[in-house]
Length: 405
Length: 102
Ligand SMILES: Cc1cc2nc3c(=O)[nH]c(=O)nc-3n(C[C@H](O)[C@H](O)[C@H](O)COP(=O)(O)OP(=O)(O)OC[C@H]3O[C@@H](n4cnc5c(N)ncnc54)[C@H](O)[C@@H]3O)c2cc1C
Ligand SMILES: [Zn+2]
Image 1: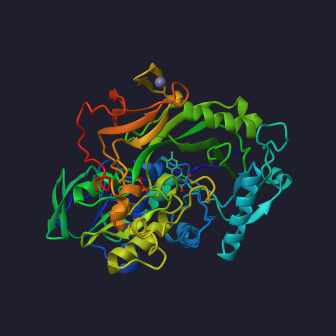
Image 2: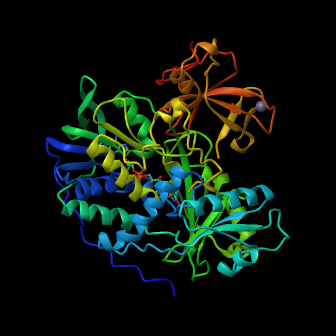
Image 3: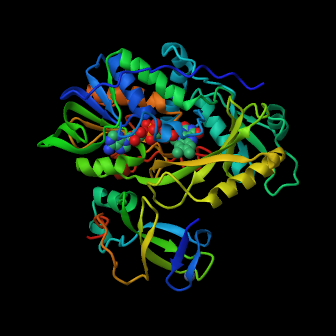
């Protein structure tokens, strides 16, 4: 039987009217905005703060993603950030007193070419040196962990092995947002929905507040967590971001009995698959190529990922696409996020998580809150500054990190 | 799937095309005079407007030629397509890319 889901919860937070002034205002009520507010309140004692969300809580990418959580990234900076995030995930259900179905069922990144194999083994080595659980497994071990996968050599790109991170997994994304929101609310944070930031108030080079559709709100500090809309916010605030916004789609099948016990990702044939607790097969792949703010993409992208999925998992040939949807992801040229101060005083930006920021939710919140409270980055996000595009200290996770989700 | 008009071949399926990002980003005229900030702007910064965007497409599975388009990034609707060298027929709100001007 599929797992029984928890009861639909009552209201978990107040819906207060915005005050005229806060010590800090966070723009964007997705996972990152909420996690930032949570750690600002909990770790830095800043409770006179608000999260402003133009729509409804977690209506952006937060409740549209495919919830893969892992930390097996190649570079030291990324391993530091994503492994911290994974460690926070491991303690959050208890800390937030909310069972949001965090399931460490492991993630495999398949290798289908000799190039894949070499790159994967290199990444496993780098992960192990950085204290990230990672191993290289053979096709037979892949099959043992996920019996429905086809490891025969009768397909165009046979499975030649995989990297495996046992502590990786999935969680129920909307519940994660609600868990953070409830705790934030308990600590006095105002969560304000239907409140769109439309401009910034500045005194010289210092930000002093935001203009919204619900009036002006003064703020000692302003922190941007706008994900797909980060460029729009930055333009209003008067600085540039090296971000391009793209549609990213995902899909689910109808409900099935549990058949897929882990998470399988393939960069080369390009699909990734897990099975949600309720029983849907959850699948995704890459972005639609063009810039887009439309929260939708084209069907041929879905078709290509289904083709890859059916080749790897022949029994999926009998499943049906129940629902497809899209989000707007904020991509950078080095496929790494920006968690940084800006050229404007007391204005901070967290963005560029692109196709893979759900897993980074606690890590982003933890390091970004530190950056905001101290006006200095935490050691874990210091390298994720905006200046790296100028200094050349890029954190190039393109390809290196397997599929970037 | 979008129906995209190639200025040479006419309307074809989106799958025949490749995307090239922001249009009209010129290579710096005198590269040796650019400082790091200007290089960063040329290499890594592209405008990302919500609304009209002048961008490049290539008809990869057709005539293999590049062209420009003005498209709305919210509705995805193409407002105009035009050949390289032709002036942008509709103005866009986003400023042209920095860095290529020097
Ligand atoms: C289809 C899909 C699959 C994905 N799969 C994965 C995955 O498997 N694993 C993974 O790690 N990541 C994944 N991601 C990426 C992940 O979802 C994002 O990186 C992450 O959610 C971004 O942070 P967020 O939750 O704060 O974003 P969002 O939830 O998008 O939050 C940003 C919020 O800002 C609000 N906002 C914007 N402008 C304004 C304004 N002017 N005023 C007020 N509010 C504003 C928006 O309404 C939005 O709610 C996926 C994304 C998509 C779309
Ligand atoms: Zn053509």
